[in-house]
Amino acid sequence: MGATVEQSPFDFAQDERAFDAGKELALYVHWPFCVSKCPYCDFNSHVRASIDQSEWREALLADLAHEALLVPGRRLTSIFFGGGTPSLMEPSTVAAIIGAAREHWQAADDIEITLEANPNSVEAERFADLAAAGVNRLSLGLQSFDDSALAFLGRAHSADEGLRALENAQRHFERVSFDLIYGLPDETEESWSANLDRALSLGTSHLSLYQLTIEPGTRFAALHASGKLKPLGEEAAASLYELTAERTEAAGLPAYEVSNHARPGAESRHNLTYWRYGDYAGVGPGAHGRRLGARTVRHRKPENFLSTLRRNGHGIAEEEPLSAREAADEALVMGLRLAEGIDPAALAERFGTELVDERAVARLVASGHLERSEKRLRATPAGRLLLERLLAEIAA
Image: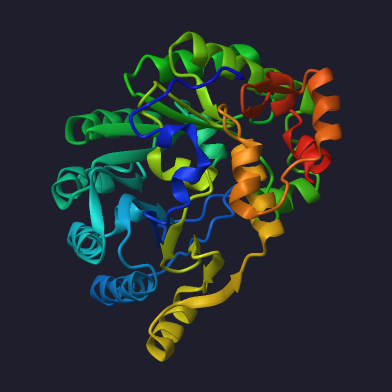
C-alpha cells in the first residue's frame, strides 16, 4: 500500500508546480438521474419518471459554455461523465458535450474521456455508440460478483449480467475500470479474497475497491440507526483493507490512491487532477469545481438547476474564493491520499503558506505512520489506516 507508483507518461513530472502555470484543465460533467436509488449511495442522484434528453443536452451545453468563458485558453486533459448514471445519457448528448468541450479548449492529444456506467443490459447495449461518441475509458459499477451481495446493495443487475457487460466494455473501449464494494456485514477474509481473485483475473488495468461506509442520509444509515444493520467491525475492516493492498500489489496493480489500484500508466488521469490539486470545471446538477482559486457548487436538485440556468445562464449555487490556508489544507488532504504523497516545499511555495507542522511530521515519521523520501512526504501502510487522524495532527 505504501509503495511508490512508477512514473507514468502523464505523471506531470511528479511535481505539483506543473499546475501553477494555469495551463491544464479537467472537466467533470454530472448526470443526476438513476433508475433507482441504491441504499448506500449519498451521491447527487434522482429518480424521475421521464427525462427530456434534448432539454438536458442544451442545459449541460449552456452550463459548459459559462465555464469556458471563465477559463479560456486551457489545455483540456480529461473529461469525466459521472452521476447518477451517465450511461443513461443518449450517446448523441455525450458526443455533443465532448464536441463542445473540444471547441472551447484545446484538447490534449491523449485526452482521457471517462464515463461511469451500470452493467444493466439496456445500458450495455449503448457501449458501442458511447465509444463512437468519443468515450475512451469506461468505469463500470459491478460492485460484486455475488447475487446475494448485489441484492443487499440494491443493485439492479445480476452477477452474470455484470460479467457480460464487462466483456462488452472490453470489446469497445481502450481502457476499462470497474468498482467493487467490500467490507459488507459478516464478510470474511476468505470471501473477499475469492472476490479479489475473480477481479484480478478479468484483465482490466484499473480497479476501484471501496469499503462499505454508512453515509448520512442514506437508507443504510436509517437501518443502522434502528439497529437493523450492523457494519463490519473496525478491526475486521482494517484486515480486509490490508489484504486488498497486498493482493493487488502482488498482482501488479498497486494502490496509487487509498481505494484505487492500477498498472503503472493506467491510473485515472482525471482523478489524479483532483488529488494533485489541479484545476477542474464542474458542470451539471450538484457538480463541484475548482478553478481560478475558487470553489464552485451547482444546484443539486435538477429542477432548481434548470431554473437557475434559465435565469442566470449557469447552474451555480455557490462560488467562493479559497484562501491560501484553505487551498493548502485541501491540497494536503487530497495529496496524502496518493501513494506518491506530496512535496510540501513545492506546495508551500505555490500557496505562500506552510502546509505541515514539522514537529508533528517528525513524530509521525518516528512512529512509522509517515515516511520521507527526498522531497516527498507520504503515508505508510500503517498511516493510511489512520489517515484522517494524521491529517488533523500535521496540518500547519
